[in-house]
Length: 180
Image 1 (cartoon, rainbow, N blue to C red):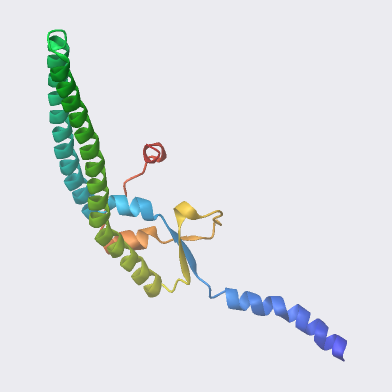
Image 2: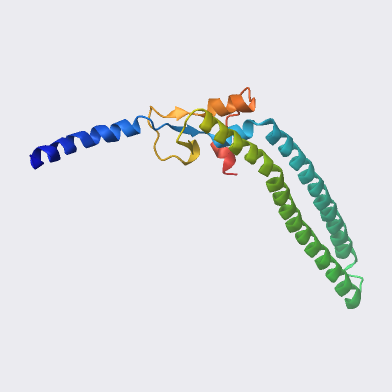
């Protein structure tokens, strides 16, 4: 009798597990493509480019000043005494240090500005994904860019989120451009 119950249990266990898994709904989404397709991202990129261009103009101005002073130094070097040469060399070194410091500060500033501008966009995307997951009964939604395996039966949630965000077309991302 016990053997029959044990055998019945062994045979019924996979059916019970299958019945439990029948209600599990898993989905995947391409967060990166959705993020790049959002109008807010384009506006943030435009603002960042303006800031980057302003910083580049400032660096160019500093480089031009450095080049001008270097040319002056080379032209007058032969006629100046050691005190003037030393003073002009220190001036050039100070200017070069200022350029390097400014460049580093500009990079840090741009990175902080990018993070600050992207945070609300990413939060909106996360909130929308959570809403789509809850509305459609998904147990989990995974990011396509981090999946190790995707079955042909997997459900792409990207169109649901795309529709909810009001995105008409998705921007295709060039993987080679991301590596730059």
